[in-house]
Length: 283
Image (cartoon, rainbow, N blue to C red):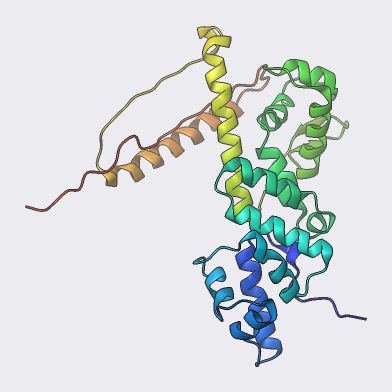
């Protein structure tokens, strides 16, 4: 019977971190292990190829993945998962990263090792997830996927609403009170940096799309758009970001004081660079 590995690939979303931990564990287990030894086992000409990959100075080509799988001693399922990790970590577009993460999150062994990642990714990757959570604050809220789908703008399918309810309850974002009614919960959500970054990108992209649609879809009484273009010193950006954070906290505090809210609104505040920085020379 083969002993279970101390370093399990299913506990990772960053393939470079997995390789670094694998090398450290193997080195601690037997001092003769080295980057050169790994290269020989994998059939690489460069004795430091593993180190270069770990340090982010080299990527793993598609034809090299089977060599890594063999040298790492991964079984078939672990090998497929490792390939998805490599694709996720080396993707150049958000679309590609999403596709690879879907494969990662679909792994039963990954979900068993890191349950929160898949659920949190699901939450932040669909604009209607936070909207449904807030919808639960209405006194007339109904735990009915068809009703929920019809309440949102734009409407969503009952199947999507049903899946969203399951995800929200799993994350503790919706909890049942003493009467069995769903209400908003306040859990602490944590996930790996890579997954969190991708999830947040998905969230903001979808909310910006909703904002663009609202310009024409909603009357002016139900929306407010403001924009300004300014030129400031680079050092001022940190202060502006802090002011935006304080403003958002004030908006949240004021919104939470409403005893009987009747509609869900989205508030987007963006600050981003529109020009290159000037090359200032001292006189």
